[in-house]
Image (cartoon, rainbow, N blue to C red):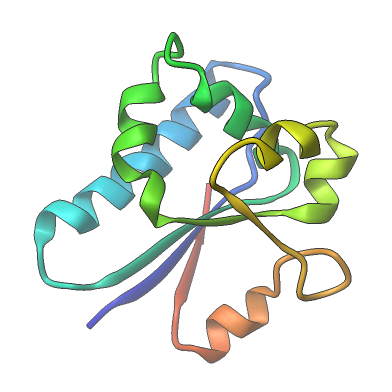
Amino acid sequence: MAKTALIVLAGTNGHSDLGRVFNALEVVREYEEDGQGDAVTLIFDGAGTEWIPELEDPEHDAHEIYASVKERIEEACRFCAKSSGVFEEIQETEIDFLDDFEGHPSIKSFVDEGYEVVTF
């Protein structure tokens, strides 16, 4: 069984960043549709935390795919959400915060658990 942690680091500044977050969401959907029971999780870190409020908006172009895989979103970086000014907005969603290494997600813990880490 494959174990993959996808980390969105791209901010919300341009078309290429939208492509990165969309591709990350698409990979999650591919895992789900494959049906082999592989473990996949999606983490928003760094400027990537800015995507959550954007994707929560039903009018956003990527909202539909986001909503379809939202249950696979592990969490968002607490520190980065605060520094990006989206902490309160993320608190209003079902997404929790990762802060197990100095306020940030512990990527090492995913590696220790056998996850392959892929960044977008």
